[in-house]
Structures are given as structure tokens and as C-alpha cells.
Length: 190
Image 1 (tube, one colour):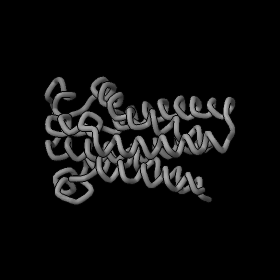
Image 2 (cartoon, rainbow, N blue to C red):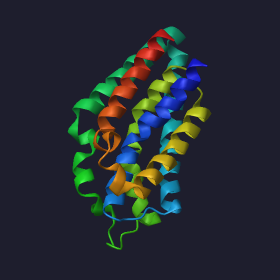
Image 3 (tube, rainbow, N blue to C red):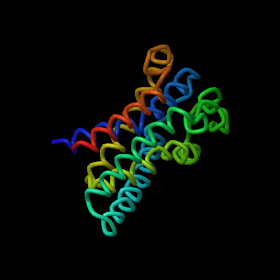
């Protein structure tokens, strides 16, 4: 039961920046079609799967308890880094989301969604390694990441003008950082 909570929360935490990006595009009236949204989600899922498997390899060389502790501490460190690092928070990108809409047609095409997906899946990399070190299911983590990616980008894009003024819209990166720290602490005692 406890790992299910972690899987759901990691899916949400890893995608709160996706919500912020969706909001930024929604405000600018730039559409993210379902094909582009799916591309971003699939990229995040692939990166997460590879990262979780890499984290799982750690379990082969150290005890499960130590790997779990290190994975939990890594989650806490990722959360702190998310809170402190301006580069990771994508603030510059949020100010100028049009940079990926190369043809300026206010639609993020499949081709334009690939570099955008690369930036958004950074959140999944380190979190995936930490989750893998904790011995949590790769498949369910990947499904959670993909599902919440589609939901967050879609909701953000659709309700951009309305949600940008909400607490979640303004503080998505900070909420993501704190949520990852809480997951890390939760996993230490799980």
C-alpha cells in the first residue's frame, strides 16, 4: 500500500513542471495537440523506465536496506535541488514558452514537442534512479509518470489563463520540490 502512495505522488511531483509549462502555453493561446502531449509523456516514460532500472541495478551491489536509504536520501536531495536551482525550475522557459513554437503558428507540433519533452523529462531521470534504488515497481512508476504527464500538460494547456493565477500555477516548482522531499522522508520510514 505504501509503495502505491509513492508511485502516485512521484507521478504528480515529476509532472508539476509539466503543468506549469501547459499553463504557460495556455496563457499564450498556444495549443498542444494530443499527439504532442503523448510524445512528451512517452519520452518521460522511457527516461523513467531506464532510470528506475538503473536504480534497481544498485540493489545488486548493496543491501536492499542501504539502497532504499540512499534512494530516499536522493529523493530528498532532488527535492532540495528543485527548490534551490533556478535552472531546474525552468523559470526562463516559463517566461518565454514560444521558443519551442518555431513556426510561430501557436501549435506545438510533433517535431516541436521532442525538444520540449527532453527538457520536461529531466525531472524523471534522478527521481527514477531513486525509485529504482528503493525497489519500487518500474512498470507502475512509468505508467504513473505517463498518466500524470498527459493530465498535467492537458489541463495546463486547456485552462492556462485561469489556472496561471492559482496557487498551483504560481508555485508548481516549489510544490514539486516539497512533494519530492516528503516522498523521500516517507520512504525512509516505510
